[in-house]
Amino acid sequence: MGSPLPGGSIARTRPLSGHRGATAAAALRNTSVMPREKQAAMTPVETVQELRDGNTRFVTGRPLIRNVRAQVAIEEQFPFAAIVSCIDSRTSNELVFDQGPGEIFSSRIAGNVIDASVLGGLEFACQIAGAKAIVVVGHTLCGAVKGAIDQIRLGHLTSVLQRIEPAIEESMATFEHRTSSDPRFVEAVTYANVRVAMRHVREDSGALAVAGAVVDLATGRASFLTD
Ligand SMILES: [Zn+2]
Image (tube, rainbow, N blue to C red; front, side, top):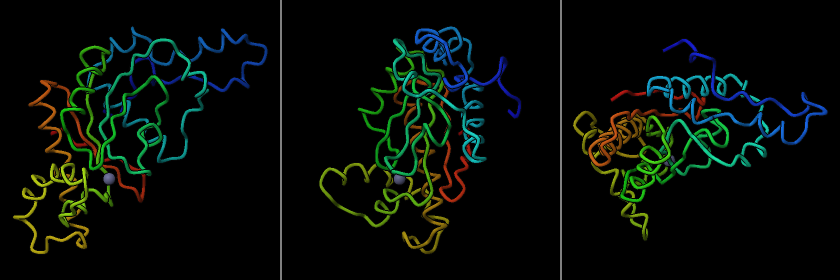
């Protein structure tokens, strides 16, 4: 899983400053970062590898340079992956995995839990729009996970946090101090919550290519889980 994808990584857009004199139309053609053919040719393994590579670029401070405005303007999209992650302001999937517009679907919900609305979006992403894998992404220091451990009750948030309770129950047996002030317990629940969500996606959407990851906010690095 350490080698680059055949034909190189997906995003190839270069800054327009390197194309002085190019017409606007030519510049837009350069933004075909994920054409239908490339999406169709990718395997789920290559999909996860592209996200790993993008995360490495992010962690090492070497993101690809993109004309994001032009990428937004592409007429058709063929994203290779669908990511479900938390709403946390520090965990933008496009930044953490160094992907641009047109390259990933991004479904964000507190605590990266799975509900019917999220599943509906994933079914669109994979069955209609052709994404090759679904990746559930959790993160350290997750307020939703801590809130679920603390049994916070607040309006509609209550039902969202209750979806984290199976992960808390799975983690309880191995911990004596089961509070949000124990970082090891919070981490265990965070990983368990990603695994619960992965199972949920597999069972309720029928998707076979499902992966998971947890992003360490201190380093930006994503640790990938396969099941
Ligand atoms: Zn969170």
